[in-house]
Image (cartoon, rainbow, N blue to C red):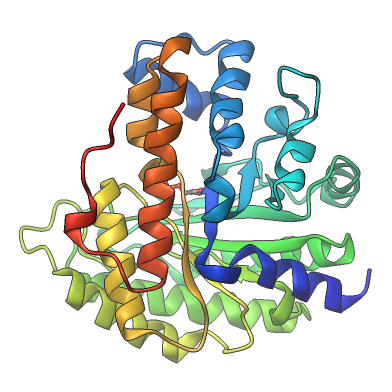
Length: 340
Ligand code: 13P
């Protein structure tokens, strides 16, 4: 694998204001999403729902890559075409979640370390043969009393870097995702501090492990108030603190920063991304949203095949709003209810 192919793949995913659809919910997580709309999480329902998203006409104008889960990468559309081919034929790059989850970190109560390095080289080879051209590994950093510790941040940064090196060896672009959770009651300044320390160690480890920055995408949290914080920072403040933090820690060689939504509402995630792009930086600043791209589409579908087209319209609308935010051209008046 030539390095320039990795660079091209990374750039293509975020070209033309496009972003990423994170549709890589594990079997446990998708069950939670289906439970909320009263749909049974069978393999066929999961396949049908993912097909609804991937087949939506026009999604390819706003979505440059889709992250799949192991089961989904092995599934096919109604006509037997594997999902990776359905996506590739629309010019959308197929990706795969490869970590095996965040587990309690021994000796550090309340903190997690992400696992999945054992056997990863072999799994990446298979995923590439199944059509995956990029991958994702999510590290989870929790804010609380006296946490995160440097031990947690460093263990996760090290694993992210070893994963990224293995991906590049296999001809797969790694998405490096060190997620600082927004579930606590911390201020935006505390988020700034924890995100700074996390990014500092992550890029240190990527550098030590010889990871090629130009063939790597970063998927971070925004610098934002914790959900339980009584004082919620405005979009402008979020944009200013996020850019300040990233300009300190993220090399300009990174071909794209794709934010996660992390529990923001759909419109919040779009408004904040728009504010971030109104300031701008040396990298494309885009999205890799799960919940913030799917919540209303999932609800519109509700498990009923007769709602498929409506749900697709709702999904493409959300994707378009986020691509407009990448251009810094979104405004709240564009959020008209979508006709059925
Ligand atoms: P959310 O946008 O729902 O946070 O999901 C993105 C993701 O892939 C987290 O790993």
